[in-house]
Length: 231
Figure 1: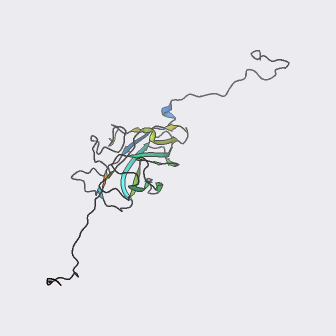
Figure 2: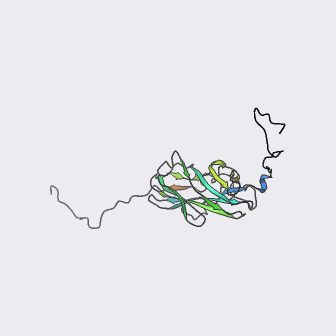
Figure 3: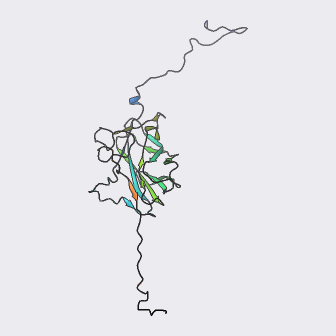
């Protein structure tokens, strides 16, 4: 009580008064660690049988898959995911861009497509249990326009993927799988432009919107024969 100066008052209480105990712990044992990688959808290589030339009007075309793995420390929740189209397609060329959960349910849909080449899946609360198992999140889209243009979705930066610890409530920056075991496709951000652990390739996981063809021929019912001059 001698440490407190009061005027015209009498101090009473049980001294010393102590605050709540604050416990400092190693973050590696209290906060989850999340890794991210891209799964090869197609490489556009000569031995790749996947159809990557996509016709206008195609719906729910599979474009990208991102793999998340959580540590065994705590469960985490996927809150938002921001992607960048580094292909030549413009805003609105692909629409109804859909993020699909590992169980096959649609988490979010961006109906109008990208804005300035970016799109964001916001307001999610998808739980990833505390385990080392990986979960795949797939991206689909409807091809509405953009003949001869290309589409490829990348995770540009670690902060474009927002994951929150379910217990710690900490926002966790993901790391790229890199040279971990098993070895992933990507080694660094951006994630999505590397196939099979190789160097960045210009066509990995990229679709091309087909130019289409037009056939013009004479109908079988069209009359034929000789026509006299002046007829």
